[in-house]
Length: 207
Image (cartoon, rainbow, N blue to C red; front, side):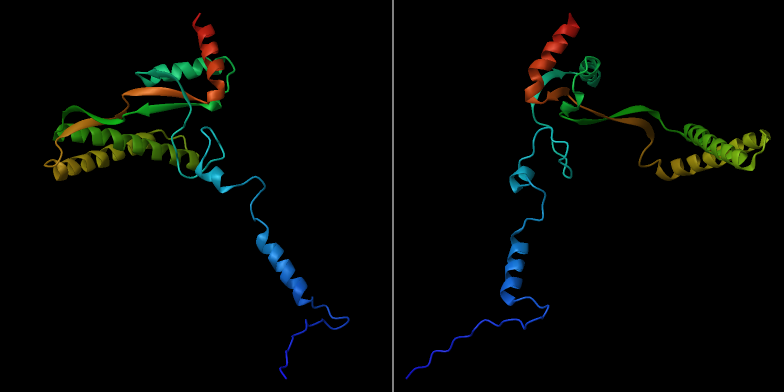
């Protein structure tokens, strides 16, 4: 004769505060199936962000939408946005995108010991004057001769620093220049639902 054994479910003792194992398992299953995210959140919304979704934070992305206009300079694109702003348009739905960015370095002249000394003295004088003003304010003093002394000391240290810096790096760089980041053109991007309204406002403003 073959005996078949069955394990009966364990019941909690009467009056015990310990929950039945089946109830604990059911609660654990419910806790695991409840989404810890706010209602309406889905993975597809993260991977497919809207063009002008302000809540999309983190990785910067290019704005997507209709091209309201293409301009050669940033000032022209800025003027279009200003005109729409004055017409009470929702400018938060606009974006200015610069295309084909280029770094431009304009050479302004040859660097020499004299120029390095003058530039260092000027920057040092401004720094010394600033520190002098801070000390005058905190010390509640009206001695303006202290400001002149601070500016002269700063100019001296700045001149020395400029000459030493030029002597160290003159073989690598013997000229002065300015750096700029320019774009070939600038486009005003707008949310597709507002394209017609924006063009109508610009047409009225141009009349």
